[in-house]
Length: 108
Length: 114
Image (tube, each protein chain N blue to C red):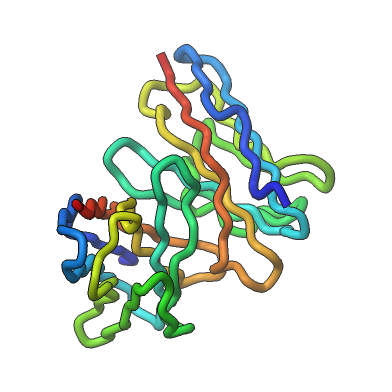
């Protein structure tokens, strides 16, 4: 079954601390993986995708096929990073499968 | 470009009534997707449409739910005879042709069934 699991509902860190949002997936083929973010009162938007291997707003995510994980990391969290983060998988054209989301709270 | 538009933003219906949710994709986008978010859950895929075609409706409940994306006008998600369990946030997304992973989301419609 295709599934995305984000084990943490809420992650709270202090400003300047490293942050890692966990994401594990279940998919039999070769999935594409993404992180979407929703800041307060804003729309859900694409943060990054694994194929591009780029860093957006200091965030990176590496696809680990052995552990079926796609954790999102940032070495130094900022208050403006506080948001809901959703890991998503695309196995078939058009269909995104989302995890339950992790709320990141960065305290001053 | 105004982005993906959804209306209404909030919709209240009594049990048994019909709910119609509208989605206007971004300019130049011909692919539309509908997702549902129940309380405390992530977004769940419902249906993927192109103009006048349903491409994938594997996430749509078998009864009472239907979706269309006509040649002219917005995409419509229609829920007949609503029940309390239909209360949720419904999100629409659009993408340009051939780039389906890059989905741009609307603000959502929050449906409350009383």
